[in-house]
Length: 66
Image (tube, rainbow, N blue to C red):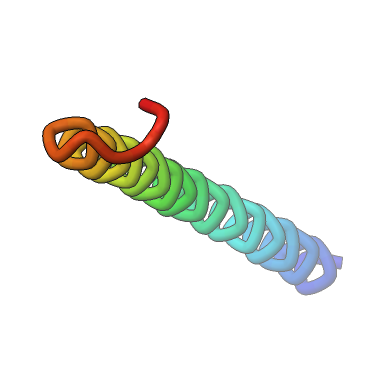
């Protein structure tokens, strides 16, 4: 009986350890997703700035409807 109980406790501890690893990986994925989102937003801001600079250059030379 003692052996069954110890094996059951060992299995439950393994399950808890596995669940903790899943939570850790989820947390890491969330951090990585935030980094990707930040990079996408920075790229959009850079593209908007490039467009504004190009339009200003065209206005300087009297070209374009901007």
